[in-house]
Length: 290
Picture 1 (tube, rainbow, N blue to C red):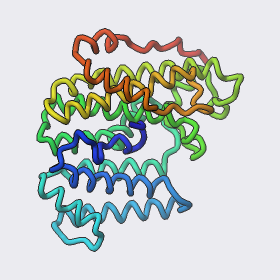
Picture 2 (cartoon, one colour):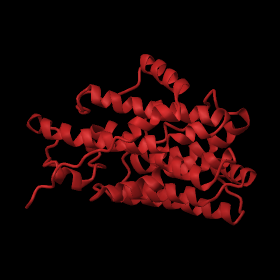
Picture 3 (cartoon, one colour):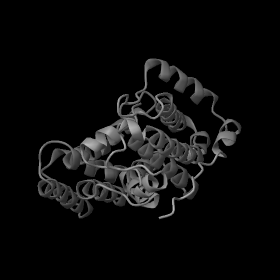
């Protein structure tokens, strides 16, 4: 499970009930294609925003129960109607993709989490609806897992995002650790960069573990699916630590050996095993005075 934008989506997973596969594939096709509009190819920002606005109009047609000429949206409309899915998560996803076109820096961690709430959390919410497992506690924990996965993706893909002239790590953290956003990949910045990344990894791990009880609470296939997702995300964090946070030269990826570890840990997950680690809090260094 590469922790990547929408690659966490359990498309064709062996744990996914066959009755849900068409629904998940329809949702994935929407999310993946919209994400690509914002990120891939040589389109100008104006062209990207126009293409995403066309998706907004298609969602409007679904809400008005009007037919679409686009097969992808026709299929999505049937899934939304069959499972009585809310429309807001789809609009939230498009909002995040539009923000990707327009925003390249985030001032605070809260700003990043706001982005995660629209770029990642809607996927978890839609899955809960498909499994008919929506309640306040489940949504809270699902949001934590999804946001953590998004944060882990940011840490994993710092170099890739930099090539797109984007930085998803909060600017306040660069200031706190005295790292220059213009030169954070340089060798002379490695010590400070490692300290910054150590903090970000700890924060993402804490968030993931705060939502992990959902995987133990939900029964059946969705619970096992979530166990693998949680353990996969945690394993990526360990891989980042293993390369001493040098994600510029060695982007962490999961190997077959990692998957064996993930499956083993998923089988042994329990609330008792999670709590001791979940109680570890990331520590802020003193804020430099100006």
